[in-house]
Image (cartoon, rainbow, N blue to C red; front, side):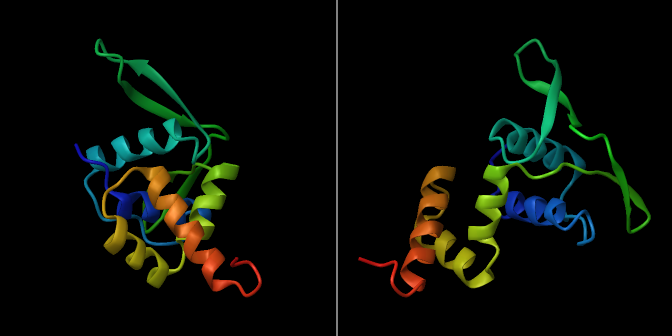
Length: 129
């Protein structure tokens, strides 16, 4: 499965909103894998467990164990980490996000984050060299 940066952004925005935004539109297997990647990247606070023979985690748990009702479905809530808050602060703006994906495409997470941060620096008077 390929990493979907738009889904990662949607999940971070969803958890930042305390699960009040609409749940991202993707199948549960895809969402589960992206939640695993968010935990591995230390963007949300959770634990991975029950490794498969290949070493890949098959289940995960939120740190605080909350389950929130959203659109008549139960959603496990994962709090954002400091890194998750920093990333979503840079990625929240739709225009900046779309420009970043158009320029850097599907490069690594760090390249996307760096480009977003550079756009912010360019937009703040007095921060640009």
